[in-house]
Image (cartoon, rainbow, N blue to C red):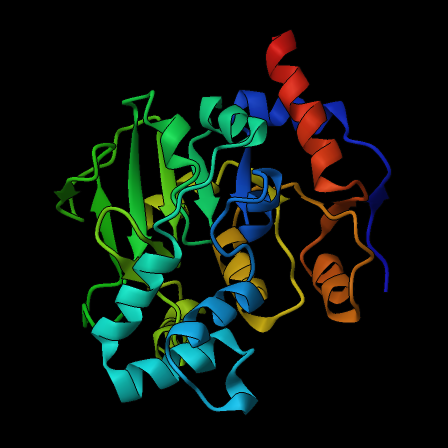
Amino acid sequence: MSYDVLSELPSDVIDGLHAGTLAPYLGPGLLLLCGVAVPPADPLGLAAVLTAKVSVPGKIRNRLTAAAQFIENFKHRKTLVKAMDEAFARGAEPSDLHRWIASLPSPLIVDTWYDDTLRGPLSARDDWAEIQGLSQGEHFGTWFGVYDCQGRPRPAEDPIGERTLYYKPWGGRWPASNYLVSDSDFVEVLTEIDIQTPIPDEVQRRRASIGFVFLGCRFNDQLPRAFARQIAKRSRGPHFAVLGEEPTRMEARFLEEQRITRIALPLAVAASELSRSLAAA
């Protein structure tokens, strides 16, 4: 098993992000750059928040999707959505990396967590639109919702001409409390994702000319691997992942399979270098 590993952040990655030929692909770990007053920053932390509000069986207490499914089944979907809203109501102060990402001319930004942190610095611009994944339990037959930069819904069939498309495949708190979080939410999507049905056509079009830089992502669970694999499918590449921790066996296999070059730096170190590149520019 082998994959490329770099010990420093190459200039090609910085230049590609500045030019829009590489796109940020964000995970929950980005919140760890924001200080202590942040929403849950990983699935385990979110499971703890949800199960502190609603009692669930001990054997699933630490399994986010199973705990969410239990709450949905026995307390109603509205209870789950309310708990998710409360978990992410406390906004984080955007880090320098969030601000840097928001300044990029990227045609696509993928964000695979539920927080609104990036939206703050993005709000200084008006040349972006947003797509969020939708739960089939709430929006049967509709896989995603489209919003303008003010959070106003727009028809999914309308062309998206904005410079940047902000794509949250798992949904988010704002503007409409869209969440893919329970087992049934993800089963519906994973049933179709191999044939790309849940992935918007505009995402598919824009990814064709870019590679991805994974920031704040771990691939030690099936869900983030499945979404990263299918969102990056048929993209131009190359792909990079900032991953300071030694990958698990399954992460290493995924990096090799997807031809992702690992940048073996702590995220905070890489973030500092990227932020400095903005100041230099």
